[in-house]
Length: 392
Image (cartoon, rainbow, N blue to C red; front, side, top):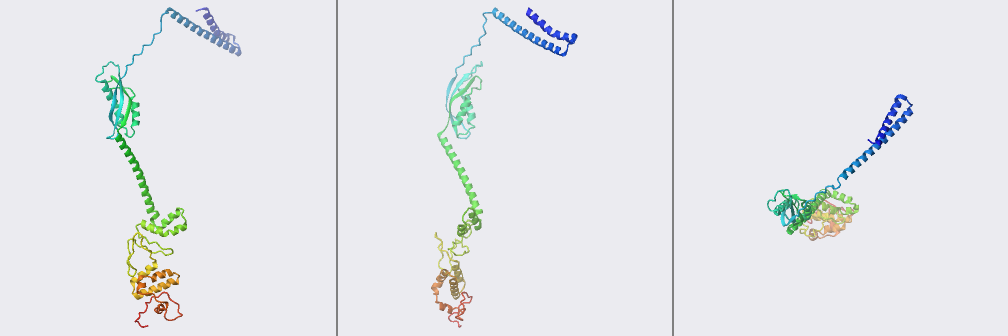
């Protein structure tokens, strides 16, 4: 131990013993004890620091002395890298591989490369054929689960997978593939394009058909269920009320046709409604003329009053028919409907077989008006006219 170390040891011992002696023998005040303790701690820290510095200097001297004793010694260099074997390669050209769809095959081409694993075992067999088989197995494992609709996407997937080096079954070769090209036959590609187009068209047609069925159900079972529902539906579409009222006759015929009911004939302006007449029936009534022509133009509209006269003509005698026609025409003229009165008078059986008489003759033949000149005319009578040979 040198002199400096002895001085440091004596200082450390004094820093410990002085406060201990003062506290035991002298019984100093508290502030003095605190001061002595702080001085002792400071001295100990200085002693420890100097001691650590001395140890580092000593280790440095020993290391220098050791290096000086072996001046020719150099660090051991790393071992040289082993020479890398040059890979061998062969071409895999236009090999059919399966897809996920039967009868649709891909065609793959690639450059196959391989090297030996240097595991000490000799290569058994043809290295090119073994590596090609390994690469084809990896290709088929991917393409057999892929749809043939997008060969380019499958090609990128194969390039990423086959770029990884993997050992073959024997473990003596490591193989991979580059320059991969995957294609689909032109005829198969055209068929798939046509099938895709037909599927899209079928989907569109199916949606249109369902829309048509829904629309037909809505119109047939809701809108055109009755004339009232059709009128309410039209008003709900913000159509004017007056226009809707004018179309009630058309709406009535439309709802009747939609429900397979008898379609009423269209009304003349101002004519009252009439009972429905089946469009497949052609009236052939005695005294009304030939059957109606139901061609493309349709039958002419028949006013209800003429139909009434025609119906009475079928039931009574000639005298009763003539009396009813004259009284009906007079009643219509009394109510300012001379147009309908002319239609009644112009009926074929009345105009041809019984020409119109003058007013005096008509009044004379009417027993209800022949009693007095001042008696009011009665446009209706349920008594038949007296025949020419019957006494009054």
